Length: 303
Image (tube, rainbow, N blue to C red; front, side, top):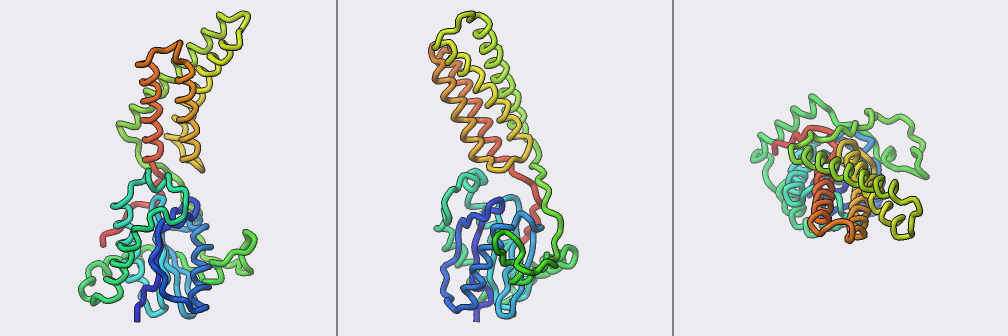
């Protein structure tokens, strides 16, 4: 009998399911476990990198790093080391197939459903290949679990009703992860410098235009706003790159839209090369923001 029954990949910050294995089990207990897995996925950001929710017949295991988590439903006979070795392998396969920008921009559930074939392949390997062939990987995971045990829950603890715990206040929780960002890159520093320069140019031109418009016409008001709004957007892009902020993707797209529209409006006051420079810097900054992810834990998969 298979010990790993179901697996899925979710985005940590909002629990959005990105891909999942085909479900062949339809017992009431299993369906209830699936429901609690979905609930637990919404709260993964509260937990450390590894955790297990144990029940009578099934267990849920999860392993997360950066903004991607892999989760699995296993039979209770499945060793924890085997489950986490499977999840680490799945994490590496997924992050090697899709970059952080694609993952961050995903807006609908199961946006990477084609990854199901990879999940099934890895799941089959762990279910039917002899454990002696994976001995070195399993020993490494066992050592890591001894040094840093996963957080332990029960399936009832994983259930939430109306946003509060379902009558089980005692949970082995560690502090919520600290969203420290990945190290700043040389290209990131360049984007910051260019963004500050663009912001300064927008501010100077906007103030200059306002000072020389004693009786401001309707068109001049629009031009002043077209300078000042991109100025604010450039400064906010710098903030988004340096510090973590919820809903980063939506904010990045919004700031990029403001800068593009503002520069298009200024077509008469700026030549084509100036406009392309400002928009190019905005796209570079947006890319740098989306690729610089929160660093919750060091990647420790050696499978």
